[in-house]
Image (cartoon, rainbow, N blue to C red; front, side, top):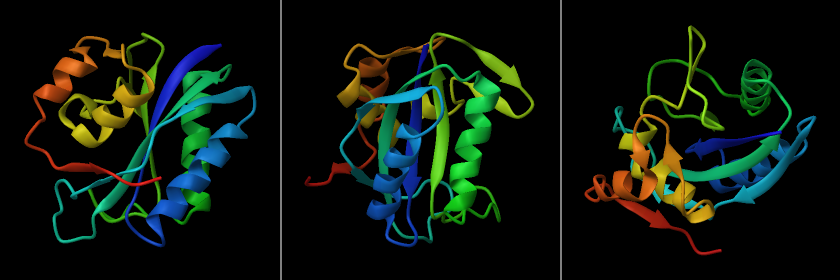
Length: 160
């Protein structure tokens, strides 16, 4: 089993409900156990700014799935939620970002782990730190220090 982290985000079609449903669907993946789920957070969009705020979270999985199989499972969940990839940083019903897979570094045409921009995004780092206070990103360092560098980004923890 390998510990993997998945970033979850949505800003269309009842975003909070989309994120909560994603936790349940991740928990039902084969050979995978959901072992941590962060609180929900609200964040402003990045890139394409003319869209609603996002609801974000991070899930911790213990998985026996290989990285490619996990990626395919994440994409199938997104598709089931009506995810459309119309342009980069577009609004979305559900976005599942493959953040970390143990301490592995993967550079394949369809998969880069650690996620290449996670170290720059408070809406990923804050919920990751919540469920794994000692988290580090291979090649980048401690999440606590990386989050401090993102202090100007507005991320708000939502009430439970």
